[in-house]
Amino acid sequence: MKHSILRIVLIACIAFTSLTSCAQTRYFSQLAELPGVESVYIGRSVMMLAGDNILSNVSDQVDLDIRNIKSIEVITNEDGSTATVTRLVSMSSEIINRLNMEVVVDQRCDNERATIYVQPTDSTYVTFTKMVVLNYDQSDFSLVFIDGKISNTALTGEAITDDDDDSDE
Amino acid sequence: MNKLTITSSAQLREALEQFYAATAAPEVIEALTDYFRTHPQLDPEFEADRAIILAMADAAAIEEPADMEQRILAATCGSPRRAIWHGIRLWHAAAAAVAVIAVAAMWLLNSNGTAQPVQQLVAKVDTVETVRQQPAELPQAQPANTATAPTATPQPVDAVQRQPAQQVAAAQPSHTREVTDPEEAAQILASTLIRARQTIAQASQAPAAIDPALNSINNSLNSLRQ
Picture: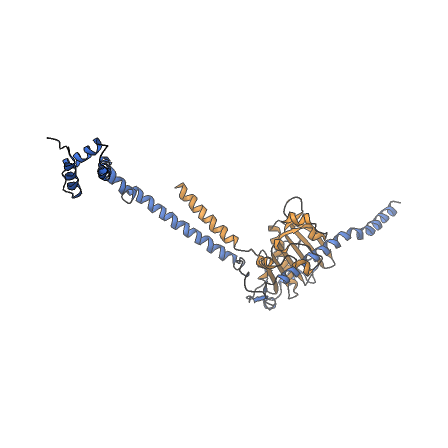
């Protein structure tokens, strides 16, 4: 009997993990469902297709292994509606709170607000597993969510040494 | 009863002929067995016969267990207890299959298009745009989360909520674009990181801008004290 129960639990676990392993979660999909909202999703497969130096080819200011990134979600409103912005801000803050992310910078200038949230890998804050760059004013909203391994040097703009590269791997 | 004994090669040959012809009486077979056991040194032409006769005699000496038939039946399908356990196992397997299907169905239904398999590794290189038509939807009342709401809005939130449903529904439908071009993905990632850097850099310069304001406040306080 014990063996049978164990077998059932094992089968269920394997089925669940196999489903999750071949699925990618879109954390901000609810926002993309709103009318007047444009969203861009970049999955891991695209990152894996990228070459070694694709980021440095695109911009010499960024040194990061794109293949450490699992997904990128971009949410913007295209209708210029304050109601849409208010709703997007409310929904995004709920999701960000649920992800237990921490504020790095919260900057307000006139009507514009820019906030950067990160989810650190550990207490050293050397690498982050998730990052949100949120920017909005009364009529425009943009949110970029990066899911993947990001080093703090990619945020501060310091040169990444070979040692850092190795530690990222 | 006199026991049959073999005393010559001619008798041995005759007994062997009966044995191979399957006409030998049990006494003849017993006599053959005794003869081969008691005569280890024989003409080589009888060695093969010796091996056969002694092997058959040894096999006949093995006793069949009394409960052999029951044991065979129990090992296959004869035991009611075993049949019950077999049924229970079948039910468990069926329940596990149902559980797996239910988990998969729930997962796929709950994801509602949010969980997508890694599928674009092969063909698509260009960007694919899908437009989801949304039904008319009246925005819900904002949750009491004022900390993250826009700091300055041209019209109050309740005025926004009083907007006619048609006006809000007339807003453009949502667009979900799946980027499958790695270079475009890299550009988005790079621009995001650069923008984050700029925001951090601006924020780090903010304290310097506060200093003159603090100085003027301190000056005012000093003048008041004097």
